Image (tube, rainbow, N blue to C red):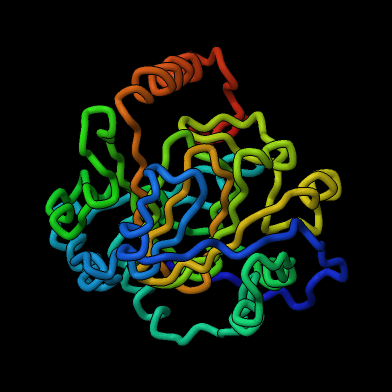
Amino acid sequence: MLIQAQKVSRAPDFVPRGPDFTLMEETTWDALQKSGRTWPFAQPLLVKGGVKHWRAYSQWSFESMADLCESDASRVPAKFTDGLVEQGQTKGRPYLPVAPYLRELGKVALDTPDPAAGLLPLNRRQALQAGERFYLNWAHMQSFKPTTLYLAQWDILKKFSGLRDDLHVKALWPDKSSLQRRYTWEYIFMGPANTVTGLHNDFPHNWFCQFRGTKEFILFPNDQSQHMCPALKYDWGATLSDVNVSRLHEQTKELSTFEKAHGIYARVEAGDALFIPRRTWHSAISLEPSISLGIFGLSPYEVATGGVFATLRDCAHHLQLYRWGNCTCHQARG
């Protein structure tokens, strides 16, 4: 059964100020092509309606995905994330059938989201001027217990390769020469409102495509790393943070550092494509049930350098020689 986020009866008295933010730069494909900007982009960029012409936008739904999963003889079980994997001890990941979970999400998705909800309610966002710095409503994160059941980073295209026909991955990753070529890895994220992806940065560039629902993103360029409280917890392709955005009001030590950062805020709606440059710190919070696809890409040079190093480090980890017992891939022991 789907675990819903529960309202807290009384939010804690202390609401942190947190870092300050500016709004994400937004554009369209037409405007981007006319600008002549060089790819990959140095800063995060939100392409409004960037994937609305994809078949995935018009055809992927919780119901259609559930039908697809039920058509498979194995009924497609998958590993779900049980709580934030980025912070604290890694919990055992439940291995459950996908279809019943998706059908329940489809029922919940019929509810109209509250425009006043979120880190930056719509009326406040619309009143902001270009370049204006502002603070987020962290009381929103204190008003609910984050959903604990989340289907994150599922390699769905490996299970159902036909779904690739609904995507236009090459349109996001220019391949005009061998030097621009990108090897890509695609992972799906599906879950209810109030799911949280903890603060982290990824080794590859990432195109984040939103097909259903709305998510809020907070992002910090790599030059803000000194305020991100990098963690020792191991993850194969990412650097994690000790800052838990769900519980900032309880993190006195981390908060004093985190509040010095300057961030970027984005509201990513169905049909949008968000470009996240490599090593950009980010966290995502769902405002409503969502279907998203992360498309990570590496050039041949990046594969031959950083990719090889990451693989060697991962081998050392699995041999229990590097950060064993403090990772996202194995349940904490003892």
